[in-house]
Length: 165
Image 1 (cartoon, rainbow, N blue to C red):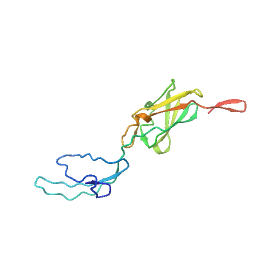
Image 2: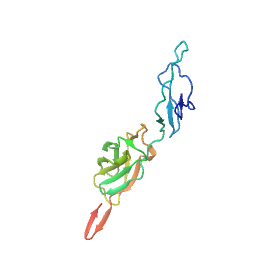
Image 3: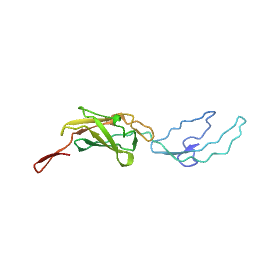
């Protein structure tokens, strides 16, 4: 039995036969609970198992949100949910010859500081994240939202000095 409440059977309530697994469809955001019993060839039933911990259904792919430029060599990449494998520089690419040289994870698993080779201030770049970056449920990035554009590092004046930040 599978239900949206502990011990409930409103999602699936039936026999699966002699199989090791049963796929049960849920809706994104639902929490499902399961319990099982066995039936032998003579039709005898076992006691019901305890109820499982709630299992959250996650069918939505993670997305890269708009980038924030920190300085001429750093971009802040934020995903709309915590992800894994986002700390690997090889999972990123950038246009116009800018290379990714390092990634620093920030708190929460959804924000990463992406260090690049020098960007030209005011130049448009596109950062693309490969599909090896996944959410904690194993869903790959939404391909339509795995790239984001940004303008290269900001040039600001401070007294007589030109500074990049």
